[in-house]
Length: 403
Image 1 (cartoon, rainbow, N blue to C red):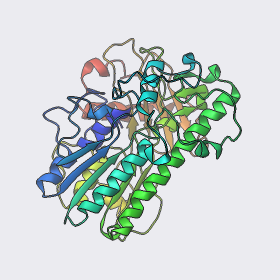
Image 2 (cartoon, helix red, strand yellow; image 1 turned 135 degrees about the horizontal axis):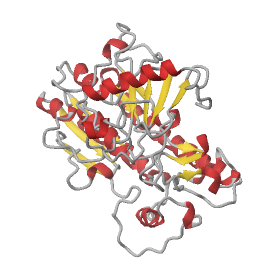
Image 3 (tube, one colour; image 1 turned 45 degrees about the vertical axis):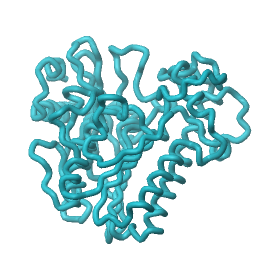
């Protein structure tokens, strides 16, 4: 789907791709969200979030929610203005944005215990809302935590699970760059920080699910869990999710970034795994299908219920992940195009494409495009057709028509 943070949520909320047009931008007056559709059906709709990007003035992602609770202070949220003295945990040149990290450290200076962490606050607020609202006949609770996004600062005991005894610099918000600016020990600790943050998130999401059980809601509530993107922790010699050093030359979206988790639990559904291709735009259609409503005309997503019920093996044969396509022909934007077996990494006519066979090379280390040119050309044709179906304007398409 659309990459990264805000574009993915636009896909999710509206059921329509945005990478081919506006990218990181507010919802427009023409955008209709799944929350609006459910509110019109009589659902009580609530958003609880600590993700400040889409709560910024004018972003409009609260549209359709009867209520919303924004937990302030994540990342560079300009929340605390007090001149609290703070100390960066590593050399500033190793950080993505030292100024933003100073803001974050001031925002979090109040922390005294694990429950003060943002994901803990967010999940507890969601659990408290359920206690007060569980008797509603129908409700939608949308919970959005920025974690495990950097800065990574879980309680130390979570980090010690993965890298005990480390005594070096703590690069908790690493600069997006090729990974050789970090020592092997620093990079190992970066991975430990992330793993600790993920473990923290797992614990507190679990607390929210336990609350569903406590309130007798688990057997009559659909639960959908997903994320927006991944992160390179040294894979492909990179740290980050995209480059910020050269805005005209993006990074490829390999599996570590493009392939995100999706877990859906429905009442009465047997546990299982499925390898069908799914895009964030499919979740609006799925949610409305669960509610017994028709998806609006013009959305790009498809309901996943036939796959979940075993009635179909898949709802799509191609998945695309991409940042906003550029109008400037000198700007390199990589799209990832996959049919589940083969993945094409394509940055336009100006750069060499890459082709990977996922079953035999899941970490995408062997570029097979020279041996399988026909596969690359097929995926590229399907990609161009896909963009044309999205009414992508020619300024963005003209440098992407050939491989």
